[in-house]
Length: 153
Image (cartoon, rainbow, N blue to C red; front, side, top):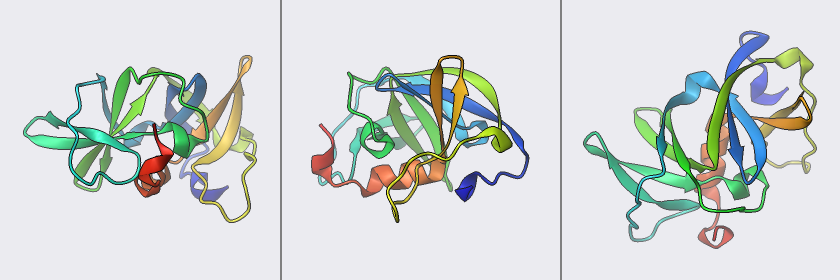
């Protein structure tokens, strides 16, 4: 099942909401969650980059995630999820981070996706009455960075 062929069948994941939809990514990819800070615009920002903000002596780029996740923007983001990308930090603008959940990879369903498309959502799980898209964190960051600037609002 793509990159979600995890080392363990059961994995702790961070549950988050974007544009009213639920998603989760491997908890090990997450560094911290902050209230959405004021962002500074930088010249020639690429992709879905919204701006940067200072965090402990370095500037962290923040990306809008809704286009890469295939949802329509529902409102301004409330939090930024900080992920590590190599030795750098990257922020993802989200509605909210909700909980840590346990996901059994053997119970996931394949998501619908176009042929040949890089898959950000690698599985789907039902939680109560809602579906949760299981996201590969590295692929999500790459997809956000690769979006043309006109694809975000």
